Length: 155
Image 1 (cartoon, rainbow, N blue to C red):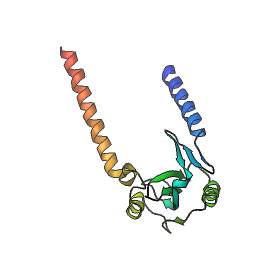
Image 2: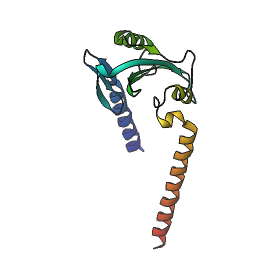
Image 3: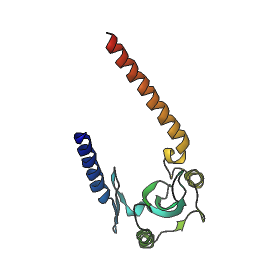
Image 4: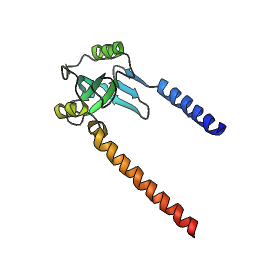
């Protein structure tokens, strides 16, 4: 029990350290984003427009989000209002000096994806379907593990 609590505490500390290092840096030549899992450096010259929206998640409060898009519509950077203060998002948009668009009222990820294809990941666009599929995978894994354990007990 103590080992489990210590492992959970260590995991929480590691996650907090990792989350504290999330950042976005915009220079004259690059847009650098350090997210929870990924570090990306993109050429600032590739940035063509900014899309601002307020996303309504399946659960929880709505939050502002800023997407920096290339001329082909690919996402170069995404900044969520839950991670960055709204003033920082405003400063970024002003600093980029790019054409800005987006919906005028809060939207779901699916509604945003309809207007800007490919802007949000599939799992965010279809949360219910993703949850059902993940549950199905977990149930199948539990059945397989249970069958393996039962067969090894009888051997």
